[in-house]
Length: 212
Image (cartoon, rainbow, N blue to C red; front, side, top):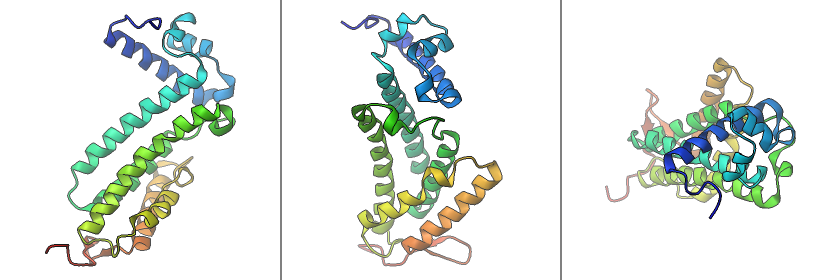
């Protein structure tokens, strides 16, 4: 049985949260290479040995942290999109949400994580992007199904949209610049996809809705 496995779930989760918080602070202050599990333990206010109750090494910690962050963000994004009726408006909200997320969760200083962690760990971290791609794919398919996109080449459109919603469009921007970047990116993506807007800026169907 792993050490600490007998701890109550709530206490164990609280311990993980504390370590994640400490890890995030150090990650953005110093970079991945410069910190150790002992540093994380000290920042979290726990003993060095207790960290190993949760994570076997630093790569395991970064994978768990990435999973924690991406799961929370994807859940919040899905909840936000579920409140929006029009698929074009959902796409607008998705673009704005992801750019704001990147602005507040930019890459830490130091080497790119791609070369800072093991290939196996990086593969697991990179898999989290697949979840967000799935949400985007669903939004685009809904826009096609409801007649707001001119064709059904969703897979062909995916690389275009994901290339536009990247970290470079959001990093190191003040609030005004970020707002402008969101507006420019959204306008470009909608035009590139062939979305039609009425005089008021509301989405218009480009094709009859199937079955209408």
